[in-house]
Amino acid sequence: MPKEAPSDLFENYYGKSSSLKLYVRRVLITDEFDELMPRYLNFVKGVVDSDDLPLNVSREQLQQLKMTKVMSKKLTRKALEMIRTMAEDEEDDDEDDEDEEGEKKEEGEEAEKEKEDKEEDAADEKKEDEYEVFWKSFGKNIKLGVIEDASNRNKLAKLLRFYSTHNPEELTSLDEYISRMKEDQDTILFLPGENKEQILKSPILKMYQKKGYEVLLLGDPIDEFCTQHLSEYEKRKVKSIAKDDVNVLDNGDELAKKKLQKLKEMYKPLTDWWKKFLGKEVEKV
Image (cartoon, rainbow, N blue to C red; front, side, top):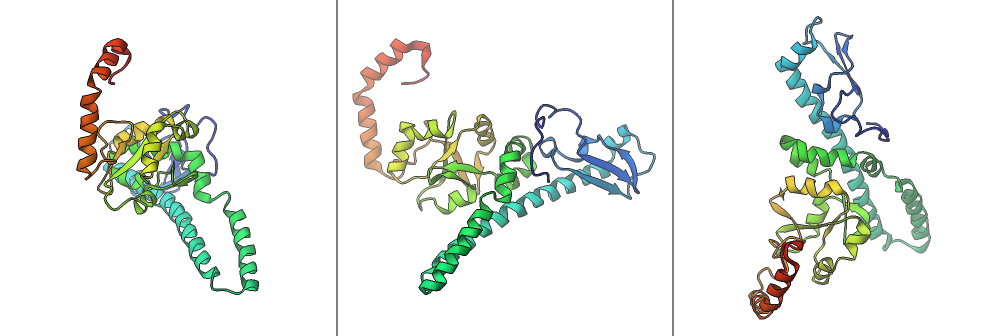
């Protein structure tokens, strides 16, 4: 796994990839065979050496061979496992920090100061966490994987990271979001926009924050396409709070539903007038 993405990573996204070299019994067959790895993993570098392929195999034969498809599946699975291990190490470190904070209360002043010094050192080391560095460079590739690779979509979804209203400065995973969800909440909520700062100013968002709901902040243009393909995660729906079909705020509250219906009826003449006045400029008032 490279540490940084090359500047032309997406310029040649649909072209030939030379990140993997294919050998048969240590003899180089080709260094531009992109069927071994899906496009969204075109940054993974390595050597594939096989004893099962014939030495005189041609490019056309390679594409037809069943063995090539088997190798491709295994390589993809292995690459995703490498990334998942990196992500899990980051989450384990976060849990360890929380445990240390609990223990600190029981220690004496001298031990506490020593622990604080250690934690400060650990915090400095974690400033550029391994998976966070990876995500900054290749997060877009993971999102493209969610869009393109239906068979590995759930594995890739576990690798996704977004900012949220829980802490707009720290990336969070969908699993971490679920662990903080309300008991009666069955939907993962998100709000797309131009950038994080603009989304945080949204009046729609304030309604959900007031009721204590966490919302994911999707400030990358590709995020909305990604969530369109990820309509469900861990048996929870994934929905935008900007759409009409989210009824989390009045979920189970019949009084609130009746009140909203009454308000809609009361203001119908006004909303109808606005719809007629604005015409095709708006979809709905």
